[in-house]
Structures are given as C-alpha cells and as structure tokens.
Amino acid sequence: MAEFDLIERIRARVAARADVRLGIGDDAALLAPPPGHELAFAADTLNAGIHFPPHTDPVAIGWKALAVNLSDLAAMGARPAWCSLSLSLPEADAGWLDGFLDGFFELAGLHELALVGGDTTRGPLSLAVSVIGLVEAGSALQRAHARAGDEVWVSGHLGDAAAALAQWQAGGPVMPELRTRLERPQPRIALGRALRGLAHACIDLSDGLVADLGHICRASGLGARIEVEALPCSPALAELAVDAGQRLAWQVAGGDDYELCFSAPPQSRPALEALSRDLGLALSCIGAMVPGSGVQLLREGRPWQAPRRGFEHFTGA
Ligand code: ADP
Ligand code: MG
Image (tube, rainbow, N blue to C red; front, side, top):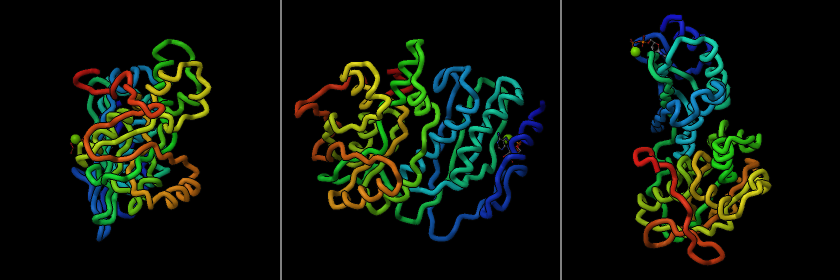
C-alpha cells in the first residue's frame, strides 16, 4: 500500500463534526471554535519499545495513544474537539493499521472527537497524537492554582497499571482486571469538566502520584502531605498476594494510572461526594496542600519513603 492508500483508509473512518470546516485532504484543516472559548492543546507520543512492547495488540495501542492525550484535556477541564495523528510505520501493513484505528476511533467516538489531519511516514513504529479541546474562557484547571489548606483528591484507583506491568515483566499471567487498566485507561473527561469551579489545581496521573502531585506542588509553591492508607485500592489489586509495601509503592510511584489528582477547598467536599455518586467514580481525599515544598508521605502518622520515583525518560529512572 502507498502512503495515499493509508491516508484514505484513515479518512474513510472519520466522523463528521459541524465545527470542522475542512478536514483531512488539504494542506491544513480549518476549524471553527465557538466564541467565548479557549483552545486547550496537548500532544503525546507513544514509541514502540519505550511506551509499549513492540508486539502489543494494535487495538490496545490505538486506544492508548489517544487516551493519554485525552487525559491531558481532562486535567484542564476541557471538552475534546479535534485531533491529529502522525504515524511512523515500519511497513504499510493494512491489517495492523485497521486494528490500530479500531482502538483509536472507538475512544474518539465516545468523546465526539474528530480526526482532522496528521502525517504518515515510514520509520520505527511511533504514534504521535495531538488533541485540541474547548474550555470556557478563564475556567481551565491549572497546576499552579492550589492553595494551602486545600484537600488533595484522586479519582478511581491507583496502582493497577503498575501491578499489571510488573506481572507482565515477571513473565507470568497478568490479571485481566489489571491488564485492562494498563491497556485501556479511561480519560476522566466528565470529571475534569465538573471540577471547574470545585477544584483549584488538577493534573492527570501519568508518571505516578508522587511525581505528578510534585508538579502541582512546584507550580503552586506549596507542599503536600499524603496519608498512604487513604490511597484508593481496587479489589483486583487488594487480592494480589504481595506485601503491603510493594502495593503502596505501585500506588504512590507506579505510572500509567491516568486518574485525576486535584486540590479543592474543604467546602467543595459535599459537591465532590455528590459528583462521585453521579459519575459512578470513586473520589478519595488522600491528604492536604500545606506550606513548604515537596510531597510528604505518611504511613500510620510517620514519614514513609516510597521505594522508587515515577518514570523519567532521560535519566531512565
Ligand atoms: P502535505 O504533503 O501537504 O503535508 P500529506 O500528503 O502529508 O500532505 O497529507 C495529506 C492530507 O492527509 C493532509 O490533510 C494530512 O493532514 C492528512 N493526513 C496525512 N496523514 C494522516 C494521518 N496519519 N492521519 C490523519 N490525517 C492524515
Ligand atoms: Mg505532510
């Protein structure tokens, strides 16, 4: 297949959106943002061998390549609108591409996201996605807006993806519930939208709680104190026969959770509890923003050291 045929295969599956005046096929797309909105832009790349093992199911890669980007929009409180897809493929394999597009478009369809352009080249397998979301002017959630006295919350459960990765790396069977969390993260778009006005600062958890909450701390000029007993644990993770220290390590430092971590004033608590019921999504208060710097972990009231930090690309740690 030639480059043109690959692009045509992609274009044929794109859903229409009224605000896409000109989509795939010209030198650039033409998009019509509604008045009174800001555009939230984010880009994230997945590389074979770095972000996923080379022979991962293409459907899972397609879902995740988009999910990690939508998670960034969720953390800003933005509504997904448009995206681009730059593919670097070792060969023009229609079967692989179709699988990839199955995963990609399944998730895009859930959020009425339109693919409006991209690039297709030959090279090592790499998927570079960018997304644009819409957010009412002035209302986006930002890392720098935490205040001392805010409570710190997280959505869903922490540590499942890291546990799945550890099981996979150990060469044994991977628990299906954990594997789903690693391969099919759910971007928390509805939560991010609802947090505008309730939360002060927000971030999505891609590199682990300590690393990512650390970004809120630095940007806001504050510290955070976290009670590790309060970290939400899924039934599947609780069932694993590992010691509590290992489980906590996955929960505080494991990456790939794609939950939201946010700080909110104590008076938001009743609204957050109601929101959790409405969304059918656990929201757990795990600590507080405090004067100072850095993330301090407490276990049974005593300082506790996490065994390892979140993943950092260039030091490889
Ligand atoms: P140009 O040479 O002008 O950059 P291309 O031949 O690269 O154009 O792309 C032709 C059209 O197809 C453009 O509208 C581009 O955005 C779109 N396109 C190319 N690759 C992809 C892709 N992987 N996904 C979505 N759209 C793509
Ligand atoms: Mg091009």
